[in-house]
Image (cartoon, rainbow, N blue to C red; front, side, top):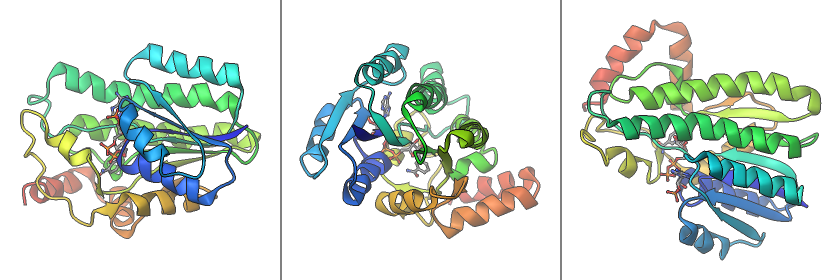
Amino acid sequence: MKIALVTGASSGIGAAFVRRLDQLGGLDEIWGVARREGRMAGLAAQLRTPMRTLALDLTKMESVEALRALLDAERPEVAVLVTAAGFGKFGTCADMTLQETVDMVDLNCRAAVAVTAAVLPHMGRGSRVLEICSSAAFQPLPGFNVYAATKAFLLRYSRALRWEAAPRGIRVTAVCPGWVRTEFMDVARDTKNGRTVRCFPFALRAETVARRALRDSRWMAVTTCGLPALVQRAASKLLPHCLIMACWEGLRRL
Ligand SMILES: NC(=O)c1ccc[n+]([C@@H]2O[C@H](COP(=O)([O-])OP(=O)(O)OC[C@H]3O[C@@H](n4cnc5c(N)ncnc54)[C@H](OP(=O)(O)O)[C@@H]3O)[C@@H](O)[C@H]2O)c1
């Protein structure tokens, strides 16, 4: 059985990947992971490909264990893995609760790596891993600090994993878009100081991100899915990060 496994499948970028993978066809099933099963069931009803909905909270280690046990029991061939479950909270480290901080690290870093580790043994030549990072990974971001740091971790992890997985014919891509119009902003603002970041220039549609990322994952180690984030990536390599942080400090208040 040939499947794609998408975390964060209940909304935004993850749901857009599910729709795109369904359009492309060639899969026996799509497995979606998120907490809101009803949302995934609604999506599944719109697809041609059968979708299995797995209601799991990936901040809990037992959820990853359950996913691994299911994979080991059913032994599907995972052609595509997309780790899109993730969230950020706006605010400085002083604004954030300990729970928000820890959950961000747990979901964006630990869960992404743990799910990838559980899935990799079920992948073969030609399979693809898309780790959904962010252009926030390219430089530190005051007022969005922990989130940006989690994405920097995932970007580094993805890049080295690409080399480690290459001998098995598995391609790994770090997907690093700028702002994308999803529920992400509502979640990010639902915190003590949610107005820390006020504008979201050049925001892409989730469908655009999914389409371009799947195209680029055939050969690219990193994709930004658009020009603004590509410029940001280049700037982060050419300019001192303190200069970029100074620009960000102005931009986020607009
Ligand atoms: N939107 C942006 O501007 C943007 C830009 C760059 C990168 N990204 C990244 O793209 C990814 C997807 O975000 P999005 O924009 O699509 O936001 P979104 O619409 O809020 O989707 C987030 C997804 O993560 C899932 N999720 C959250 N907490 C979870 C948990 N504890 N266990 C399992 N699943 C969980 C949510 O499902 P449930 O709530 O049902 O669990 C949802 O499906 C994230 O990693 C984000 O960092 C977003």
